[in-house]
Image (cartoon, rainbow, N blue to C red; front, side, top):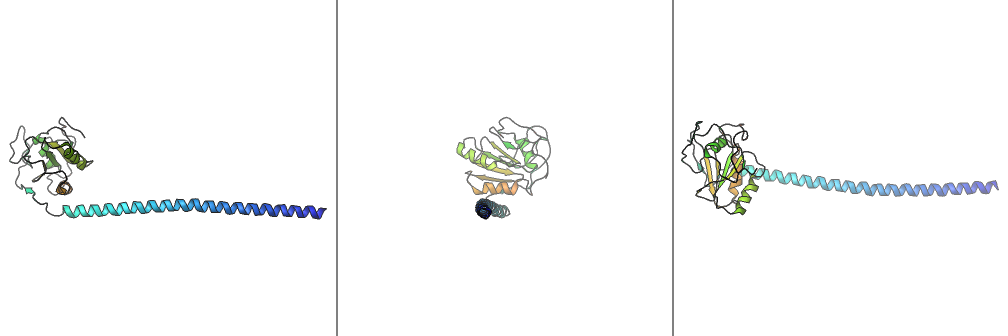
Length: 217
């Protein structure tokens, strides 16, 4: 009787050990699937991030290469004056690309109304690019210009009455006049001249000056 009971205990222990072994095997399998899936997701994320970084590097290199070359049809004005003066100033270019100007600059940003020449010239002295457009320009084109400016600092965007071309991009001593916001030269102009080598006062602010009416951002 004791032998039979002992054998039954051994059989139960054997069955229990087998069940436990099967459970542990199942847990290992589930863990392998879970961690394998997590690993696959992590690997996919790493690959995606790497591709984004590589693509951005290539985009930056392409932009830098374009900005290092002369821009077609750009006008250069190397002899503009740079005195701080009070009152109005008559400029030789429209919009101006430099010259005597107010001691106070226009704060950079997007404006829906014209901004004063004498203050905005000072902004360009600090390295800003001033994009101006004819007030009759289609809203779709204005929206594209606004998107192009985006979060860039050291950019002014504003309408300019009586502009003789749909769009003009100006920096200190240089200007590009174009017909469309889709013109690739405009983005290159921004890359080249925002705080570019033409900047008379590198590091000077484009905030803390005046904010004329009509500022959108």
